[in-house]
Length: 260
Image 1: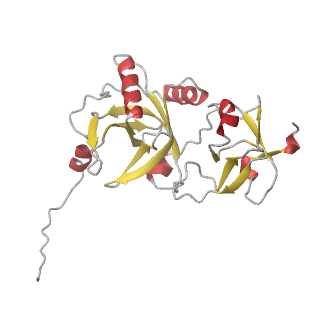
Image 2: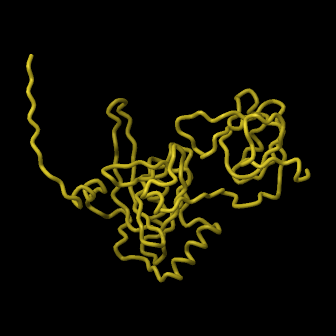
Image 3: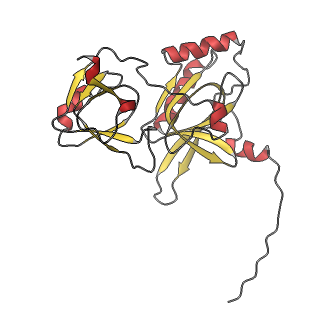
């Protein structure tokens, strides 16, 4: 297929009628009735040319990708293998910690972050008061190359994965470089947290990819050493306790009047 027959995702809009798409990121849906037709081709990191899908506006309150359009597979859609992916197979689009901490560049979509482990707080079990369902979580703190830090809160399978990784490197003098893709930013008491977004997020721990290699090389160039204070889950306090105790609070008395 020649290049002039390809429409890049960034140039797609909902008013076009026929196109073949490739590149950048866009949410996509596939109806159950046609899913068997495409399931063998929908494999992570596999490069595809998608011909003749439909495009509609993404009106979701919360988007997984910062794109106003959404692609939909239909019965007449064609999926063709493509060797020329033209970029990273993961499609990382890292948000700087400076922008994250200043709330710049954050909308109602997800973010990608990369950093090295500073410390890990104890694993916790949380019970939903409405459903009674239990979930496990762990909060870790990661740093960028300029020393800015951000908290990641990882739930359930993401919690288990990162703690298993920490166990595997315990006692080894190596940096733990963490990537969370499609994370959701939340704020608590003026502190930014990036949580995994249900099961959509992807967690990479010292992954073998160019982005991690480049980050690790810059750590060495900046002479950033593995800290002895990295606890890998041995801290006694929770992250919430530490944040509250590190800030100044004023005790106040509220007085109200009730007349029945």
